[in-house]
Image 1 (spheres, rainbow, N blue to C red):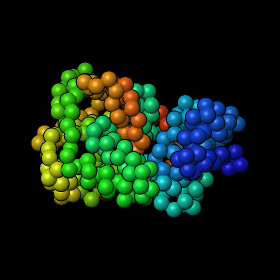
Image 2: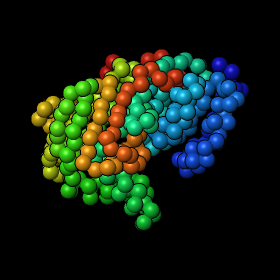
Image 3: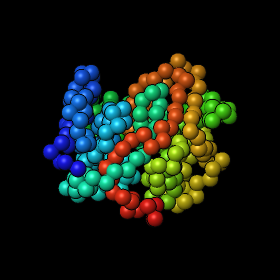
Image 4: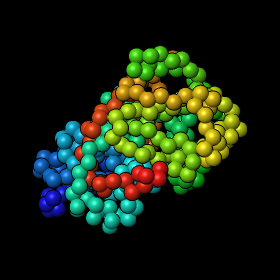
Length: 281
């Protein structure tokens, strides 16, 4: 790889939003120079925004994890240190990984309807109204939402089969998520070619607490606590004309029905040859 042809983009979410809203911004200009890769420095929202363009252009993506949680970088096996992550990019080892799509918009990690989207919306309102930090706002929003978990009716069409459920939470992952134990929330692979679908059964606040404890100790049961499916395509029908969808941590309204699909091996990314925790997750 010729490092002088690598382009690094701004780190902040605000800068990325401004670039995307401008129509022709730094990402498009950078891609026009035919770079060896594009580097996204930031969290999952920033990486998602840049990946949307690199998938279209077929250009490899490098990731410098400098956000809050960096789920995608972690599941790629990238080190937390920016210097070490930059060294991975410089080595130039390329992999292709799957991406998900919801109503035409890409997600690298997951997209969901229900509890989490409500928590993010309330967190942002608290931050804007009271000027408090992200984590404090998230804790307050989480407490508010989980005290009275709202359920909603959905009809799911999963690879041609129909399922009717009332649920507080529909979660769609790009590949399988570990649901329980010390590695809960991680993924073993990003190229298995499937969407993982988790539909939570209705429960009250103490039921959610009990579910979290069972997840910690490896006692979640498919069919009792939630329904688990694998699919290449999914359609979620709602009684509402539009619904909130959380996509890689960012929430937006989208028209119903909500259509999910997998795009196998659509993203070229610079990453370690093998996830260092692949054997232990």
